[in-house]
Image: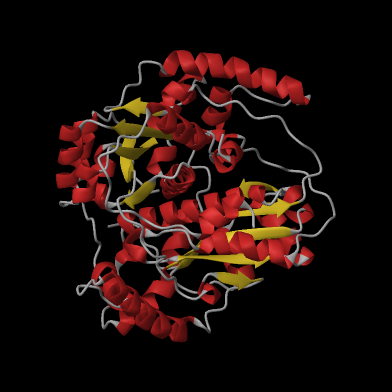
Length: 246
Length: 246
């Protein structure tokens, strides 16, 4: 099979890293791959902030609710919605930018941030590195905005730890592919049975890892999705000018 | 250089396809790569709908405002925010799902949709296929919801054409990488000069393609981002239960 396809089909996260640093050359290749990501209307409204400084990584670990791998991994990358960049183009063209006030604008920027994050992940793994995406930076977005000195019309959406993996993990199972791929039209008839099967499979996965705190998928998703999860996202984004209300 | 990194650094879109079909085996490998994408809290709240039927592709081409490549490419894939899938897990756990009412929930789903889309793009290109991401399906989301029979708590966020490329395009230039990569903190001092340089570079790119309708980057972004672009996103998403207002 094709090497790239094989790599993607074996996607896994790493939460334990050695002390070996990531070379600047390796990091450059990864960033270059993500920089070539496409964006809606070629707006290029995504930027990244590379954080190597251990004091700053320790601070981000706290902001994310105490995730030790952020302090441990030698590189942390924050993916930024950057409507400040596009604002310069819009004003040069003689207009006032308003896209950041719409759900369309936020959705487009979040999709494009996901493309960049996905390319960072695949490129890191292609270099033989381990990585794990981090949503926990949205727990206290204002603290991260202050730390990274982010101006109006920007927002820190998601992050990624990266480094040399200290352990090799087994593949985490997924919900059956019939719940992912639909043909011609949406058809959820397989969903309920697939959830039951998956709850059992993921408990076997936790046992395999010796994780006695592992929960069935439905319990874990229920615990989080019964709530708004990170309620600071909306007010802090609005303060940054990402109103998201039109 | 690593084959995967090289592929990603040479990312390009294709808007002209031959009549050669995409084999089911090739499509399976691509979908399988995207299925392995990570998701926030392992929620797996993304699904895809594969559309091969030419009558349905012609309809989607209309919905997207008349993009002929959607009718021409043998495969179109719609990436769906699928909080209907997670709802089954949340209810099994004895809770009521509310995440879809928050900006956090929409942001997470859009990021995870971007990861899936990015992996579909890279996997398609790894198979030697051409592809182009399509945001235009959000021009009339209700029409696509009707066509794909999408239930409450789902939303069609973005799509992708895929097939054998009829032409090989040159790489499209990007804004200077100094506007993409920041170190330790955000620093926009290079932005204004980079926009001026890029406006000139992209005009040379249009000339190279013989495209007399090509615009400078700042004019193109200004024309779109001065507006809300696809104003139907918010009301139709709200009707689907994705309130996005908390």
